[in-house]
Image (cartoon, rainbow, N blue to C red; front, side, top):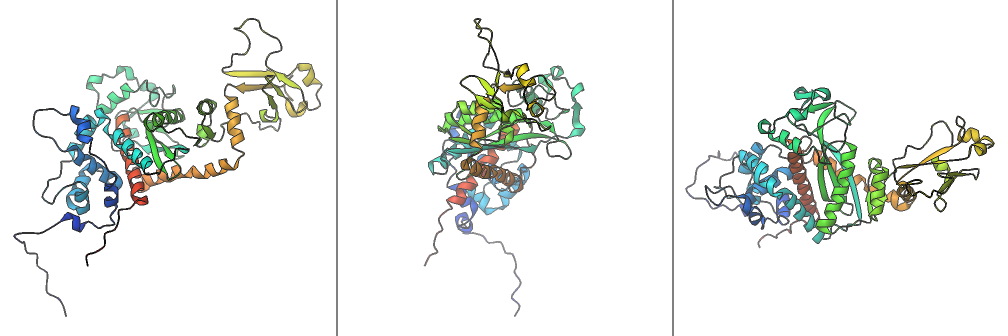
Length: 461
């Protein structure tokens, strides 16, 4: 029998509870248990005026942003629409059915103003990391680092070739916000001072972004998000935005390691990374901090013509010399200098050479130096640290570390495919860092929610 047709009839009174309509196993119920915004009003107090019209509650704005980044809602206009319609989103944002939703323009004013001046998003991220540490998800012993390219909100059509770009001609008073930020970070090691090499193109709308073709396809403007994670449960312990060049990405790891030491007293036993972080200065810095570098050494000393490379020569640290496979020494100096300004300096590159008459009479000369009178070898300043990394690469722990390194790449895949952060919506270094911080906060909250889900309530008898 066909049922009666449903007719929508407006009731005079409704008895409705959001609490009853949000499923007990909803992701936001689990996330809500780990979001602590109790101190946010006090944290932002000095950035609000004591007079004038009351502003939007900052806790509401932060909760709405967390909803957007947790569920991949990239547009602030669409976020306001979704919070207006979705009961679970309203419940998480502490909004009743009759409460109005803030206008989408409110987010821009607060992001570019109070939130940025107060470093609120960094504070929120670090509180989430502290919660992960308190719940036993971070041991701090094995950390992994990597970087990933995120496309900037810029295009080639609105750019200038490097030979035509002159930042000294820009008037900061008439420049957009992203251009002013670009001028502010010209001496920053993560951006303007990361490299003396000028990019092929510079964007007019976001000059700090890097023109890159690193994906082996069409070039584009981008920033790099740099993650430092604890491999126990893939918790992101720090994040930093930089230009998309190796020098800036490697330098960000030092910044993050120093910051987590200062903020969370985390001093790792090992750092896991790929060969981009295996330069001599980086390995020397890690070994100097008593951090074992589980990193492939970036070594270009190998030869392609079949002759002996530097690794075929034995290093004799007691006598500061190399020993060739035939047992002959290669020395840096063959006399003692009385002048302290001469002789080995301990910095830069040291050159070691065998005696000419020894090499000329050597039966292995065709395998060693067929086109030179005597064999020469260079030794870098941080060669001892490089050797430490080579020795570690022969251990079983290193093989385990190389598998654990994939956890960082999985987080980047989750960032782009699930959270939808394949392209930035905010411009400038500050905008990029804001987006990276919010996305990393969302990933950590989702991790907490997955490991510690909200307890299920049994139905009433």
